[in-house]
Image 1 (cartoon, one colour):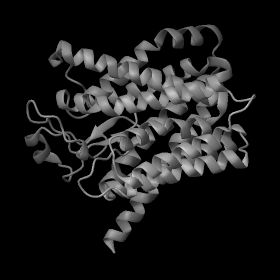
Image 2 (cartoon, helix red, strand yellow; image 1 turned 45 degrees about the horizontal axis):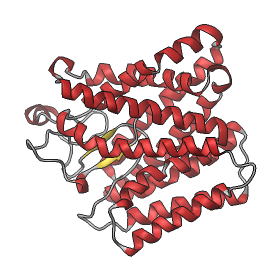
Image 3 (cartoon, one colour; image 1 turned 90 degrees about the vertical axis):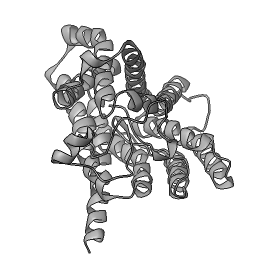
Length: 339
């Protein structure tokens, strides 16, 4: 009974996390007409940094030049990815933008596969994108292009996260990169706030930071501890659907039948690809907030955690330095989305 109860709680946490994250993006979109997408992302990143840095407290004095160089690239990926996504949301809507962005982690999961099922999943995703977009004279190619840029950034984040974990265990690298990305966007943020900010627009951006970062962090902590990682990955496929729902309820975006069908095809391809992964196969599990983590051992606490040097905040994952000159195996990496 306890296993059933744990799974029910874990599934509930994942679904609430999806609703919070996509609802936060929908609320943040209300700030676009006043602040613009980039400044809205800047405020969101500042909120995320304000929440993470006091808790993580990265040992910056111990960072080497190489560490700072890698984290700087990470920060640039964060800034471009989130700015591209919000720019796409402003042009093509939340549901379509998030669905296209999910092609990034899906592509990484499938790119090295030689299994027929994975190739079929890739084909299903391609058909889903075509049905979703239905190219024509009125197609917003710029909006689609920046959404695909966000997808590429997410894929780049996944590939680089393995290097970051080797050098900076725990949340040191991602917390620092999140703060640096806020600094990169600071000129746009300051200009927007100084010239034409309103209380409602600023509040919407702050709420987006809390709902799309802080609350999903906390919920994913519990979910990752209670659920098998394959089930967790399959449940992440609900994000495009919750994004479409949030766009409809919060932003008044109406989806055509072909758009809804295209989203369902992409969701199905992602769910099938992950659920079909056997133990030991290469896999990446994607979600809304920063961190590549290994989940092969239970989290430590108290004296055991202090003795091991592993950090369990905020996602309950056991993250320790990898052996020198040895990359963490791809099969052990779960990838959460950047902040």
